Image (cartoon, rainbow, N blue to C red; front, top):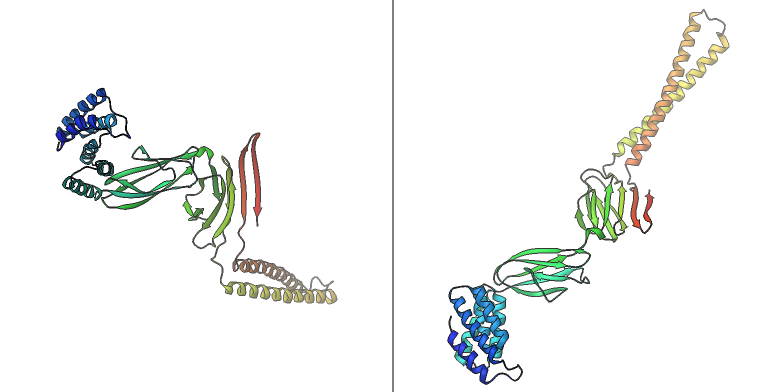
Length: 372
């Protein structure tokens, strides 16, 4: 490994003679162990066991706090493709090794610039922002609990997780290339045991439902406890909107009747009204003819049962009476149809049935509400 002997000499001689007053002087035993670990780290690095070399150099640095070992750590991180850690080690090396020759410092600064060019950034946000969460990046804990701007990562795939008590784990994987900057949003949802459930029933086929603006699959969806908005829409029907609240572990059943916008044309109402009027006129005419025939029959022919003219008059009276009944019956039917046609021409307020169930300390509570 390049510079191994130089750094080793500094480790053995320089530290032993002039340790920083801000740090405790390493003991002879610590220096001896650090030397052995440094040599072992160099051997592992030379056979490309970079993980093993990293561990040995880290242990030597913990024993001595010698800034020269930061350079060795940086080389191991670079070999492992861990560019953010490599950049941090190089930055610390430049900050602590104040007596570096100008040429050597320029070389290391160039190394730092090249290392930074491989780094990608992730802007992480967590919702809800007031949740006390534990964040991890590729399984390693992050210091921030509410998100982080500009997380430095190496190129490749990374997995971010947010965990909090009483919430389901939010997880997102992202692939970044060197120099990328990506935004990742982790949204925590209440754990199933603490959630409520919304059941939407009696909607036309093809209805789309949105809870708090997000599309959900019907008929049942888990929601967090609290108040929510529900929006229903379907082709050919007027949109429906409502608000409801769900208790933890409770169930809210909403039965919504959407209003069709496919109303009948006015011609049907006109036709129905015209038919109603025509049948009423026919009923009146036939009623009058029935009354006239009955009066004539009563006045002149009541006792002449064998006379053909009397029998004909009696038959015409029966016919007129039947036609009168039929005409008024048809008028009533046409009138009802006209009213139905008229109601289909204007929007009606949709009706809803709101049924709720929620656990209580003594068992369960239920509520029922109708809207017309």
